[in-house]
Amino acid sequence: MTINLDDYSVAELEKLIKQAERKLEKKRMEAVKSAQAEINKIAKDLGVSVDDLLEEKSKSRKKTTARKATRKKKAAVRKPAKIKYRNPQDSSQTWTGRGKRPVWLRDALEKGAKLEDFEV
Image (cartoon, rainbow, N blue to C red; front, side, top):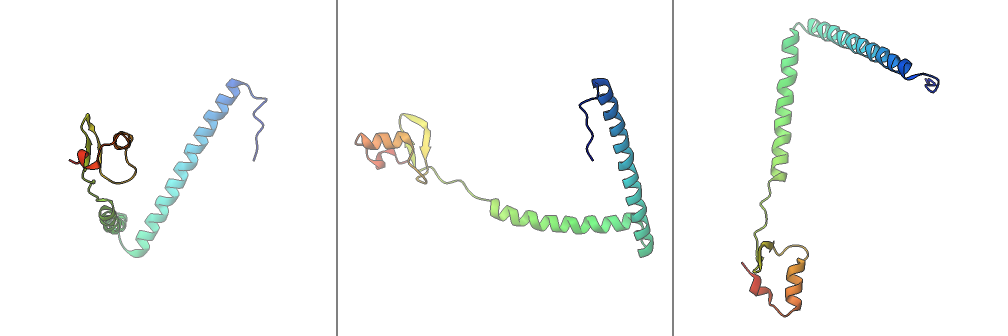
């Protein structure tokens, strides 16, 4: 469905927006009521209360979520690498020995320094 909005004035567009928002809210409320009625029917057919029905679902969801969280924690827990090298001129510049050498260390090594001079 396409509506040509080019011919509408600002006031008409604002009015149209308000009408659409009211209609949208009405449809949402109808959908919620329909879902509530369906949940009540299912609970009645099962011979349980709606609270019992929803409680069981939330309990199983909590168990599943707890299992997933445990798996994620195991994969996510990782200790940071220890610092092995430090720039004596600027102690905030460090390197763990992993990855590319930092610029400050490469420059110092090119000038004849030894890697051992920077060990922590």
